[in-house]
Length: 124
Ligand SMILES: [Zn+2]
Image (cartoon, rainbow, N blue to C red; front, side, top):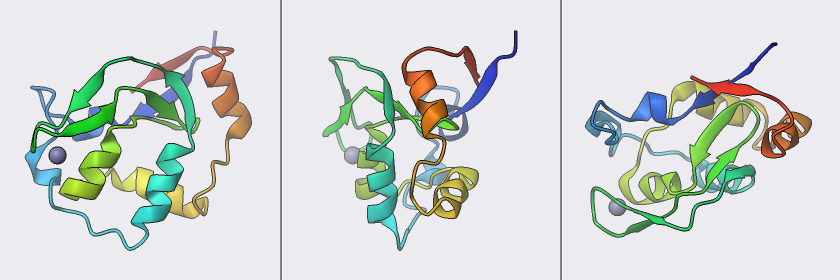
């Protein structure tokens, strides 16, 4: 059976202790931040959790632990807090992918299949 592979943003931005890598903090200055945020908010929701994630840097509530996907990547929605408040640098390939697609989710069918658990996938 062919498994579809999705990129988990965590595997690129977290260190061994599951903290965001310090070298990625205060390292972004996206001119199109609003569009990036909008993209992140428009993914398909794959996991819904009641609990909230506290920011490990400032202690504020970073957001819900809900996870979203665009069919190629998976991210937790609380990542927005780190982007806006702490200038988190996202993986370059992710940003390039978002910009190349003009901030529109292109793999809508794939996204829906993942959300509806119609296909098997693995995260790397
Ligand atoms: Zn914070």
